[in-house]
Structure formats: structure tokens, C-alpha cells
Amino acid sequence: MRIETYLRLAYKAYTQGIEVIGPSFIAKELEISRPSAYEGLIKLASMEYGEYIPGEGFKLNKKGIERGKEITKKHRLIECLLGNLGFDAESACTEATKLEPFISKELSKRLEEVFRDRVMCPCGEEIELGIDGR
Image (cartoon, rainbow, N blue to C red; front, side, top):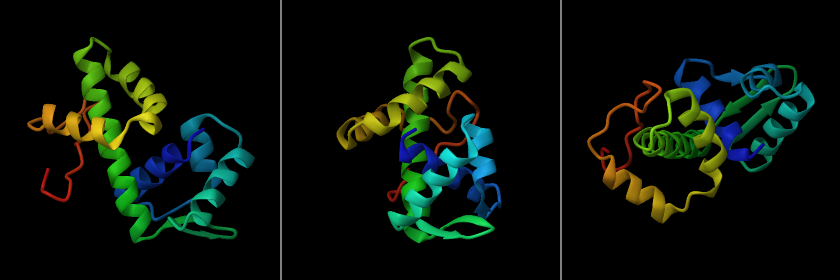
């Protein structure tokens, strides 16, 4: 599993009011083992996206929140593209998760331009606002 996916899920939890997530949360969301989820959260901490609090879990810092927001926006824009290609919402989300680590900044910016007026992705989630308000 790519580290971007872990960070997006940590950000998702953060936006839902869950400030500290443990390996069980990630393991359930990604259908992976707790040890693999733990390793991913430790990796996020080593990349300075937050801190891992032993016995509690991972907590995002400002850098992690900003990067999580970027990744989430990219994920939802990819979902919009896939929705336009005929994917149903669940399939668009699954495929976007596979693609998100490989989408360049240039392609991501182009998707922002194309879907500038979209407020929601096919899953019904709000598309994150960027620095310029979009």
C-alpha cells in the first residue's frame, strides 16, 4: 500500500473529528493486517507528517494535514474523471486509490481545471478547496 493512501485516510479521520488513529482503523479501512497498518503509520511519523504516540496511535501535524488535503483533493478529482468514463462511484473510488500515487502535479492541475465547477466527487464527498479557494 502506498504511503499516500495512509495519509489520505489519516486526513479523512481528522476531518471526521478523529485526531488520533491507531493501526486498527487503517487495517479495517484498507483490509490489511494490523502490523502492516502500524508500519504505515510509523512511516508517516518518520516522514514528519505527524507523530506516533505509543499505545494511542498516529496524530497528524500541520504538514500532514496540508498534504492529506492535497492527496484527498487529487483522489476525488481522479474519481470525477473515472465517473465521466462510466465507472460507478465505488469502482471510481477503488481505481482512484490505485492511481493517486502516480498522478503528476501537472495532470492534477489539469484535472482541477476540467472539474473546476464540481463540488462533489462521484462518492458524494466534497472536493477539497485548494489555496486559491478551489
